[in-house]
Image (tube, rainbow, N blue to C red):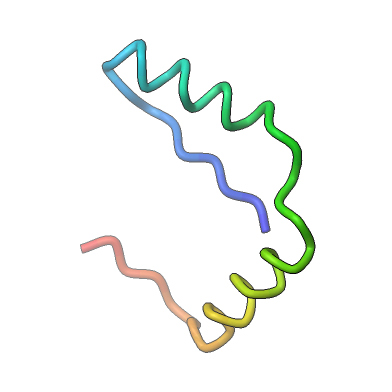
Length: 47
């Protein structure tokens, strides 16, 4: 799972986002849980 959300007008938010990117990857059990939760999703709508 790879997700990058960017685009902010707030420097504090940008710094928090960069700090998040520098953290270690999620534990494999957490990744498995997210994959299970979203296994049935076949489309994305940003409406």
